[in-house]
Length: 193
Image 1 (cartoon, rainbow, N blue to C red):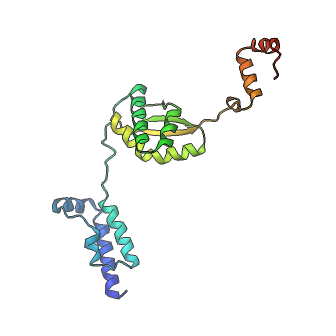
Image 2: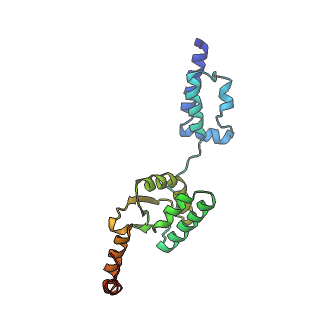
Image 3: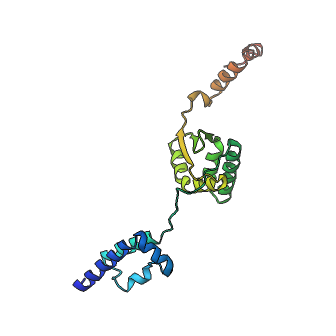
């Protein structure tokens, strides 16, 4: 890279940095000419390290910015939350994400406060999958409920080993807890267990 090309690259980078100022942003909105990669290609070689920095700066500059301070935060109840939770679950099932859909249907979300929702999952893997889905779920729920300050906490709920019944002996012991007269029936018919 020649000295002239380096100086041009530095000028472009400095120009991109100055465009982030609010005064300059107003000028850009009037001109309606955003900084794009095509404009930069002529000034910087596409194979240089400085071009990578320029491209990243251009992408960052062109990204739409949301003003999160002025978004509505309407109140809602658990019934409307469940309605849109199930709606999203059905939507992603149709999209081919059956695993996420089944995780969402395993438990109902709990409304802790107007901005905090708690959702219990069975294990770490389910937590990872739901965490990945949050970037799509939170905007969907926020838009439907018209409450843009929602946070969803994912909690791993430990299950007791008692909940899992595998062998016939474990099944019999479980049924015996529910109905003690079952033992009389087993003795009367001389059954093994």
